[in-house]
Image 1: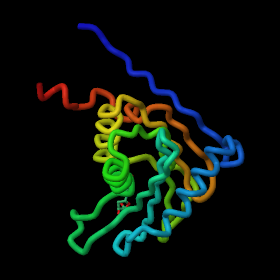
Image 2: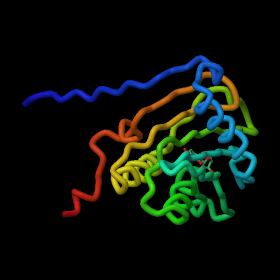
Image 3: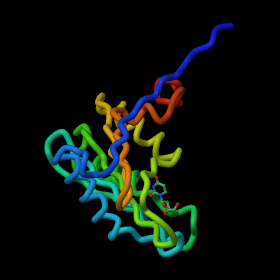
Image 4: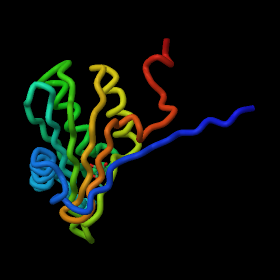
Length: 161
Ligand code: THU
């Protein structure tokens, strides 16, 4: 028997003011995109925006449905749009923010399990890691250099071979 360790490190910034101009701009855009969410059931509006390797921007917001499981997270809406509009173009950075109409929006949230799986497959497809900027409407901001860090021992396409 041997024990393996998994090491995960990420940047913690006290506020958006500590980010580079480029990152701060993207996080502000994600905050704006929360307004496009359709979240009448949870009242939890999530906004995501990607800067692609070709300089294009693609946004996504959560889209809910009266049949609850039909709803989509902002991250997967974004990935589907990016893949459709700019197939095979790597995503450099995704900023994710949220507005919780039932409470506070002052700490980072990170992608749910299904979205982690989707992010990891996307970056594998285009052979480039996705960098994540996570922050609420205010408060601390996390930066994660590679989305796969959020999904150790992930199941992936090579397992199907
Ligand atoms: N949601 C996202 O859009 N992204 C996440 O990473 C977490 C959750 C959405 C799903 C649902 O519409 C609402 O937030 C509450 O869970």
